[in-house]
Length: 260
Image (tube, rainbow, N blue to C red):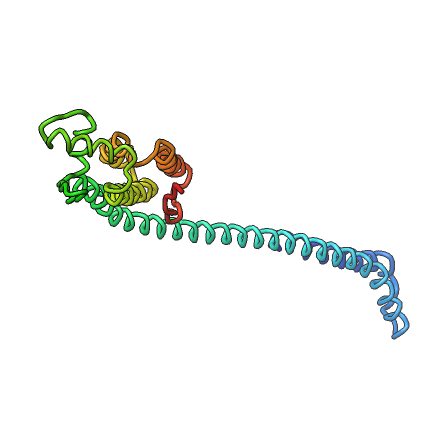
């Protein structure tokens, strides 16, 4: 309660009492003070005039006190609400920082993981595998098979080129193991790319990773080891990762790419 109101109420009470005593003195000053009966009448006179006025002041003080208590309660609630909001913001900031740190730590792990996966794929395309079929032995790699399919001569005798083209049309029998190995390595590289995109902190990193993946995609497309539908499904997963990265600054850990 304000000190000003207390001063006003105190002065008003003094004025009321002074007025009552003044009124009594003005009306009955010519009379002697008298005995107990007169003092009783004096008390009734003062009480009859002062009590209602002082009671009014008491009610006024009560109303003012309730008003100030209400204001203080509202201010306390507002402060509590602000404190709650500040605490929630602090907690959110802490969570964001924690997720950002986790994301950065994962990115530092995922970048070399992607480069290892894409390097493993390209290394395998150059690795030669011994193929034995009906007395004919071949040391072939995926890149050499692609060269034969493109019509390049000189790598193998003509009759072996015919066998290679025939087996590479469906990637069955002789080349089935080689085909499955390259499918697995390509899928691992795609999964590593999706994870790296989700946790990348810049468009430049995304473009750089996609650029390295483009060569592997071209090999799989030209060799037809993966069907067009499967390649499109993997591309869709990559695009979804790029789009979700724009809307989820702190995404949960990636789900593996699945095309089957």
